[in-house]
Length: 296
Image (cartoon, rainbow, N blue to C red; front, side):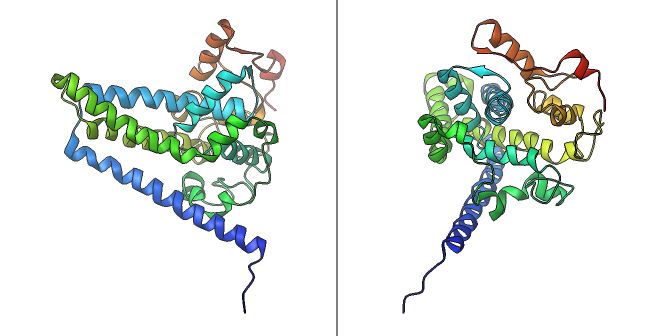
């Protein structure tokens, strides 16, 4: 007699399988950095890795986070896609999935329904473990209907795995090309792949993940009524281009600006201001001076 599987069980099984796949891919990319032992480094390889650290970092900060998750500014459809692509290059998940998860973080901040709270769970789970859990891939409680109306964003989210594969092929191909045309640079396909993809990706991952883990434990809390344990952490802000001013962000999550004091370095906001000068983005939402002077 045929055994029927309930839809809920099917969904749970699918979420478990997805979690296993994500965990396997992320572990493989972490292990990939060990290839540097055989490839070494060259100035060109380091530069490629650094450039893509910047691309990935700003893709997450002004793209996935401030634009898609919080709609803190406006832009046209073309640049919206560019931001989604930059964020996808960070290899942190599709744009709709990432935005949905982050909106849930704010809605349920530091409660058991917050997937990456070190307060409700633990530091490891908040930093990385949540991405390897089935709860991260079940039916979303915060579907991004506003983003799902754009077919190009849905396609990029659905076929996100190809963004990873194209990067692998692209970095390796770039290294082969450079070695063929300019052998004096001392690089190779594998070396560019290691620095441009493996090392750059893993470094950006842990910089981003510290916002979830470190910034809810260590740092100062200007707004103690933010409703959670979020903290401002200068070091995390430095390596994430302003994302570490997390308590500020939780107080005014709709803001395009995270650093509220002159010494709270916020490169992502400075970039947005520059883009606004050229009309690429507009309507940057920022707290008023009265709001900024309120610390309760």
